[in-house]
Length: 358
Image 1: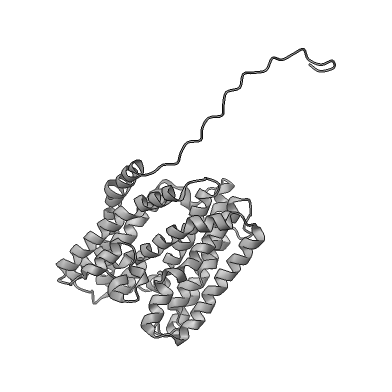
Image 2: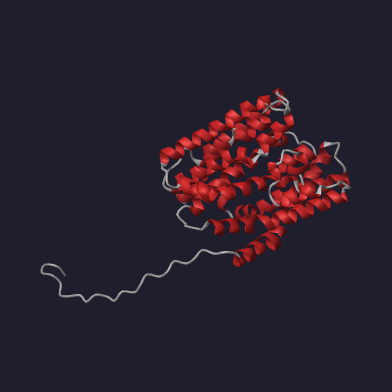
């Protein structure tokens, strides 16, 4: 996502930008991953819905509020008016439901996905209760239907106006729910013993081949067309990302070491949420101060400035905002009631061992 925004907003770097030009599909990855992780974590955990929802609020809202404050401050520095209604809609996580760009790109443009996530969280207790009672065949059919549904939506968008199509396919929570549901059924399947046939390295290869195939497609079809790879990259990539996530989970179950288990990989994973929310703010400010570069050297220089600055800011946000506020809110909110201990029963007297046994 960072390279995607750098390419689109700062300038392109040969080869790298071509591969990252449709990096917005990373949001699709995170929506599938979100469903997978939640299903894996809460299947069989018997966590009440109010506890689950409070935990998710504690997890995402504090950093959302801080990022909106930073974003609005950046807009003010740039002398760019910000709609109060849009900022309020962002803080309430309802902005992606409104088909007007001033709303879904409101207080913090990167935060639109949290409106979708908030919807996923509201529906997850019902989804888990429904799918947890089903079996492998039902999950397989569901995975096929939601994957096919994405293709149908993409084809049906040909009759929409560009503005409505962009909102309906990119932002609308019900459209993105297909990706979340795919993650939920995949998480339940792997958690309960299904072993994906695709291993981790081939799954990574599939993702790379898919994004490389988008390069000539992009050169042949402008992004403004409904049949361009812009919408397709986000809608059609969900099954590939599901295969990747399932393969990574299988590798973890089997105790195989991967690049995802290193200390810095885990740390970057912790920082990734804050990095996603703040990196585009840093890009805006850097461009405002330095201007848009006119040369490759200038573009690379801004890239090399934005990446470490935004990552350092994300690390600070995680350590001093995200993690402590989540812990505080969890302590203040509802908790899972502990199971009552089993009643004590006095031990029965043992008699002499029967003949022939010792």
